[in-house]
Amino acid sequence: MPDVSKDQADARALKRKACEERELTRLLKEKAKPKFAGYAFLFLFIITLVYFTDEIATNIGKFLELDVTVYFFGSESAANASSLRSLTMTLIATISGVAMFLRPLADRFGRRIFLLIYTLGMGVAMVIIAISTGAPGWAIGTLLINMCIPHDMQQVYIQECAPKEKRGSYFFIIKGLATLSLMVVPVLKMLFQVDTYIENFKVVYGIIGAFGVLAAILAAIFMRESDVYLDARIKLLQMSEEEREQLKREKSDEAKRGGIISGLVYCVKNRQLRYILISFTVIMLAYVLTDNYVTILSCGYLAKKGIEISSAAYQAVSFLETQAVLTYPIGCGLIVLLPGFISDRFGRKKAAVLFGALALVLYVLFYFGSVCGWNAYVLGAFIGGACGAVWSCGDLLLLMVTESSVTNMRVSANAVVLMLGGIFYTIGKTVISAIGTATGDSYLGLVTIIMVLAGLAVGLILMLIKVKETVGVDLHNVNAINDPEGEE
Image 1 (cartoon, rainbow, N blue to C red):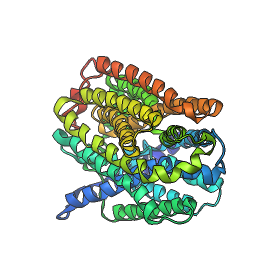
Image 2 (image 1 turned 180 degrees about the horizontal axis):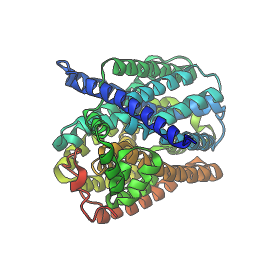
Image 3 (image 1 turned 30 degrees about the vertical axis):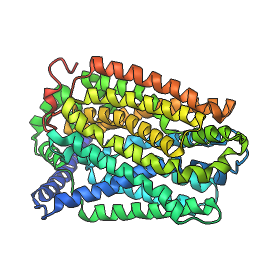
């Protein structure tokens, strides 16, 4: 009697082999295709446009927080309106967290396709919010944004394409320029000023959403796949069956494929990545300072002016969006421009500590400045600098993940770190929102300071003690950072 199971296994093996041969032919053809003159410049231009879209999609909801609260929640008189909106955002962020399981697919199918999908998704999401007339439409658009922005495929592109000795500089220069683009939000809001700010903020969403769609189209036409990914994938596909069997028996078994589970196993087994993962996860608690700053500023300013907090959200919009929010991108962008130069010169670890400490100092200045009624332009620069500094601290650890991971696990390892970090961030955000809902928005600032201090102190001390420096690592060979004692 014929062995049916063996025949089926053979058929599957032949089918897999045929698929791999077609993929190998396609990748070799793409690798051999010469880059046209000026491609490097065009690459930097388009990747910067994509980063513009990502940064604005990440922050536009925070910039227009009061508009969203008043319009979609109808809560002009609720003292805890922003906290209620924040709790809704926490629910959305929790649901969208499942998208992190899709991120490792870039290790299998390439960086380019997902760069296009996520950029287009962010643009379409902002257009959806622009045409929405109620909270359900806003929730759908916000959910889509939250499913797209954590993937940061443009970061992978930059890190894999930049020269190793300037990797940090290239990355943070582009990120800094993208951060400065956030000035577009308040500028557009002033240019399209109408009688009611409600219509105004929806116009801003629509224009920036259309820009995101355009960026995705340009990337689809001109962007090529990352050479580092092509080399690694081609090498794997050209392996013989014997070589693949040998790979399975080695400790780097997980390196032949991507995925959340194999990425988690890879991070846990690798001592370097394990401690980066723990450090980053704890530091993510400090990311709560990037939320609710408009509410904190409005409560402090209006309380100083003798205005009841119950009407703060409605009366603060014009003041905040023409002054504090206008200087936010300047403070944030100037800070973000610095980590690349500093980390390339002095190392990732020292730079992470520096910017973590700077984030705490600037946020404390922002909070007490809000309470004391300091100049709004100065306070906008303070909170912008604080957000830029804490993001830079986290980005430096993510860069260390990139520099400590093999190519075929690079995106998967980053996805695992971001996913677990996102869980801690969600926990911190939920605690902040719950306290704000229970006590009123005026206590958000103090609670945030305590959480930021705890997250940065624990995470950075652990990083200094347990994590090795990664500056200058060759991404084609990360074994130098993973010595015999680096993996268990």
